[in-house]
Image (cartoon, rainbow, N blue to C red; front, side, top):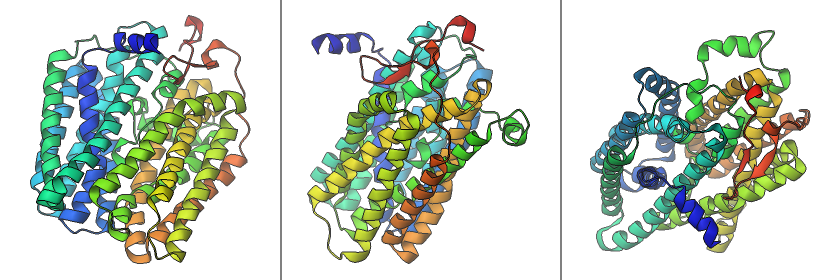
Length: 464
């Protein structure tokens, strides 16, 4: 264990601290923004859904723009610095906002510029480095980002628990946003001082190994759905990909439809969730944070287990199982809200959140692996880009829809709708062929020393 920790430290570059701090402050805001709407502005779950949809829309736009701009500008570092600085500015605006319109505006700015960092940070760690090191570098970077994200949730829970009893809930939430703004500014300064200057280049390779190493520890939040690979998806090629004779296979298109349903379902579940806990159940803001700490902690714990299970059982089996688990969890949650007037025990809720987190790890890793296997090799990067696009689109659809449904029909209806949508996704996935296991080194699953699944480096002859 000591040797592993030492190796982990040696592979950590100084500027990773800036990225970890930025993830801490944004991770805190992922729950704090809905609580700001509900506890400070006395908004509704419908308002939270609108904010989520608009944030996701800005994330999609940013994903299509920032990566291309960084290639044109021949710079990476300025985009990270500007991203962190604008995150800090957005938090200042939210802290002093006194209307929903200002919250929406600053949250959209936050989402747009946060994606600027997501679009280039991974490129910073792989450019000008040997290709065989890419997956390990990306996995290591992701671990540090995850550590920052979970630390942010813990910080939010502790800070609100300490401040709220003395100064009230509203003052506590505004104060925490002020602290987050300071943290974002410090992250921008650290990025300016520590990020090395690299030589930008458009890296042509199949990104399957990279996306598997990156994975997604983050819970289904609107502004984080698209990833750095998004800017490699060219929207102008969409008609040819979907309807052209040499485009995506029919099973690949069916899988994307299933994922659209799944991500919309996840949005129906997650977007109203903080308001459900604070409004219907009457939990303090610090308690709401604590449940999301449990959920994200489960994701971190389960991720290496999911990688090993995929290696043993295959992508389709694990994906179907994770979706069925979510059908059961969402249906049970919705049924409980309909039949029981009492607040569930904290132990029961903790177990529920833990199970939801575990199911996300199995779903995410098997999902990105399956889309890469279903697509033709020459369209694999485009298929991954479409997968991310579908994730963002599903969250945009769910944002407004889930808010309206929860506001007028109740939270139970929203959760049952999410269960129905996931079940529809299961029916489509069940009809798909089992992806073939390739025998070349590019598709050989291994676990690195951090427990993350990735692919061995491709031989030179297999690169595009």
